[in-house]
Each structure stands twice: as C-alpha cells, then as structure tokens.
Image 1 (tube, one colour):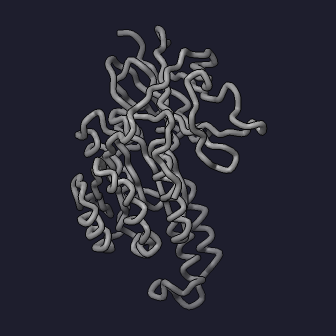
Image 2 (cartoon, rainbow, N blue to C red; image 1 turned 90 degrees about the vertical axis):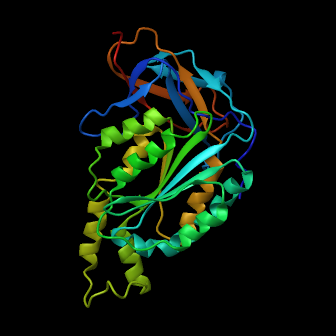
Image 3 (cartoon, helix red, strand yellow; image 1 turned 45 degrees about the vertical axis):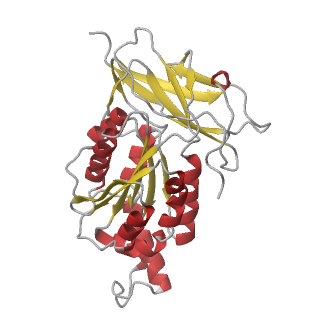
Length: 339
C-alpha cells in the first residue's frame, strides 16, 4: 500500500461565514433540473485532486500552480494547509438490501484496508447499513475490533436500496463531528436508488453544508449477476435457460441512473465501479491513498451575479512533459447575490 500521509497540500474542508448557494457539478454530469448545493460560506471551496497519466496522485503543488476561473475570469485562489495527522471522521455506509449479499465476499478486504486509519489513533469510524431502511450499526469508534465484528456480522436485507436516504443520514452524522476533523463518507452500494424519500438536490446540499468528501464504490447488480452466473456462484438465482440478452439489457438500464456517480461528480468526490474482490481492494487502496491528497483551493467572489457560475480548475504548468494531468474538482457554484 502506498503511503497516504505524504507531505502534500491537503484539504480540511472547513466551514466559514456568509451565505452562498454552491452547486457542484463535474463536467458532463448535469441533471435535467438545476440542483443547488447550499453552503454557509463567504468563499467558494474547491477541493481538488490531481492525477497524472497513470492515475497516480500529484503532490507538492502550490496555489500559484493552479488556475481557478469563475465564469472565465481568473480568481485569486488560496491554498489552505493542514497539519500532519489531521484527525478523520469516517462514515462507511454499506448497502445490505437487494442483491448486495452476493457482494459481501468481494468486500472482505474492507477491514484490512481501513487498518491504517485505526492505527493512527485519531480516526473515528461509524458504520451505517441500509436496505429499505437506514440503520446506524456502530456509532463513531476508535476500536478497530468492534468495527471488524460488525463487518463479520453483515446480514442480507430486504428488497430496498435507499442510497439517497443513507447518504443524507450519514452526512447528518458527520455534521455533528468537530469542525477541525476531516469528514469523509465512504459509500458502498449498487448504482441505482430504490425507495429513497430524500431528493438528490437536498442530499448534495447536505454534503456541501457538512464540508464532507465522498468516495463511492459501486457495483452493478445486473453485471454481477452475469458474472456470478458464469462462475456458478449464485445457483439459487440461476434458472434453466438464463437469458443473457435480458441480463445485458438490465446492465444497460442500471447504468442509466447511476446515483453514486452523480452525487460524487456534483460534490467533487470520487466514484469507482467494482465487480471482483481484487478490483474492490484496488479501489480501497486508492481511497486510503487519496484521503490526505486533496488540495483545498478557495476564492472569494467580489459581488457575484445571482445564479449559476462556472468554475474551471486547471494547472498553470503541467507536472509532466505530456501535459495530461487530470484535475478532479467542482465545476460550478450557485450564488444568491447580495441581500
């Protein structure tokens, strides 16, 4: 595992003063309706993760290395730093409803992947499970053994997958944590929501208000069904004459409304899909490596016009000759204007 506590500029996602409505959209992920992310702030916060061509994290950048534009106008961006060993509050929200039970064997590495956090002695981790209902299995704890016991006791749920409700519930837990802690949500779920009462705009707004970072590791039930049918590991689901074309159609349908991907994109978080245990472990390694690797950029708009503002974040000079670094960051915000 890579060392994820490297000497880099890191994001604490702290709160500040007056009133803005911030809408976080990552390019190309807009929903049909306008979605506002409400944040009590006199600055626009733009957490950014920089990756090179191979997907590795780029460290050691300074504020002068970034260009942050608001509606095409370059802003005076600030880069905040946090001390080594910033305490973390993490909520792990795991789906147990619908077909999630078949994914549990692929998640067996979750405990060991989180051990570096517990070994710090300052991390607090909570576990949330959900199907048609959301349940707090374990409130914030520093005890790795308690969390490991909870993971071993995961049980299959009912036919629901209330992803939005689970995210909103988890974010409300994070809001209660002290401001100086890095607030993180790790969502492990399928791609589609089934039965939530929460709305996606309210859920995104809650993430903005809590200044939390979201990581989404998702599985496609239809795709997993196809793979498990080929492996013969889901005999109770298999029927004579399985219609592969029908399963392929269900895969396409499932990917049309990818709720975890949409939320992650709109809030500047990260989203990855997994279909095997190995892939899950690779994605979890990325998660721990990236925890302290984000740059917290911010700027203060001067008398911004009410409405949607487009944000563009890029590097002034690429970190390599190929010039193909990727900057993952929020791409817009919504300003109420002066009252």
